[in-house]
Length: 425
Image 1 (cartoon, rainbow, N blue to C red):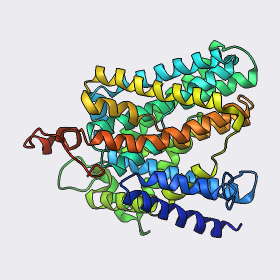
Image 2 (cartoon, one colour):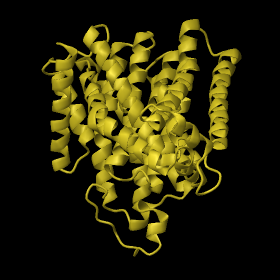
Image 3 (tube, helix red, strand yellow):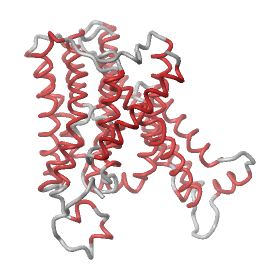
Image 4 (tube, one colour):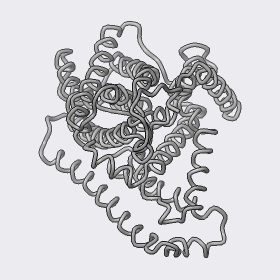
């Protein structure tokens, strides 16, 4: 099938399925993934996502662009202050338990299954992943991104993915060496991660020096952008920064989404001006939800496959994965001060794996670390957790109070009563 025809079929099917889910008050992401499953090799076989084919490789590139704009939008929406607020709200505690507990349970399960050290380390890492793009999409659909719960989920997913992809680099090095972990290998991965974080810090300091210092005056960056004759110079700056940090992340073995997310955080109204900032946000949102995000989630559905002989592994992997994230969220959230429905929602909200998990599984299969049965189990676990999370969060949202959803300034005068919501609005 020609690429344009495939995109037409995939996009229209994803939008229609997403609209159907909207009408029954569910996340449109569910419909978009389901559309991909129906059109893919699992059912109708109309669109082939095999990366060995020209069509599959092209669709993979477009799906990557979908991840790019979705994570960039998340960083822009959350902002530097949102991330700082999340850290002040002790989200780092949740990030620690949300990685360590699922990692430990995954390693224990792998040992019980008789896997070797490298395979056990890979499965443990896969259990600890939370898909940042999927989490962002769910929170945006439910209007929870700016709540304390939303900030916690995004910041925890960011830390989890940062550590998980650093661990993946370590696992791949062990697989190539065929030996037990060496101090030099661990030190190399840690050094790469620290170098990346140092780069983020340097870029942040540089941009801060060009940002607005005095209210009512143009910042040096705004003056520089004003001298450019090309259209959408502010948007071009945003995309260039995201590409640069995404490329830097991949250069040290971290998934590019982490770098793109930081780029979104560093783009502020003080840097480019309030009007330009709003234009950037609207443009990224239009490109994301209007085109690339439905294709991205449909692409997840296209790649869905499993072996019927792997059901015991599927059940074990899915059960341990869901329980690990749920218990990790409850444990870390209780320490961080979450209570009631938001505490349970934190554990549920961090269960969505999505593209990150599929990427991890594909890398493991290609590198020969895992076999087809374990790969199938990871894929099904990904689909199940991604499908279960939005409706579960939506149900829990009905038990939220106004202070759990609205910004703090808006809740000072709000009565403390149960908030019956419609999709988080």
